[in-house]
Image (cartoon, rainbow, N blue to C red; front, side, top):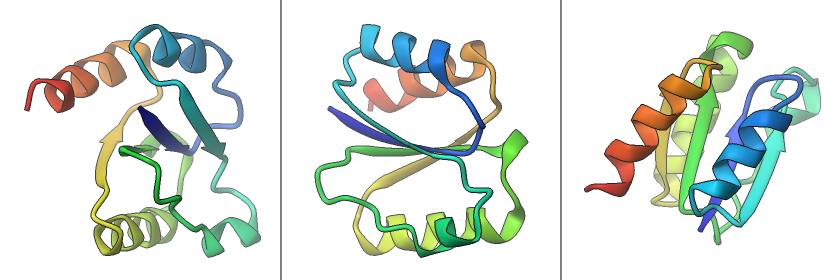
Length: 94
């Protein structure tokens, strides 16, 4: 499964935990650079996760709109593994 993580400067530990939970394609975009607003959601992504602690409102809206356009599920989480894990379990058990 593929996941696009938007937000957070470094996601090293989170990336390892995502791999343990079945995500083998992990792409990370910090969302802080001006060029990140031109984000393209890859077609092979199953999920887009936005880390709300580290991203602006405008960037969150851009990601949400582009995810809907590509029919990719988007979730909003805090930058803590417990919050991410809870939301991933909800997504997996749909």
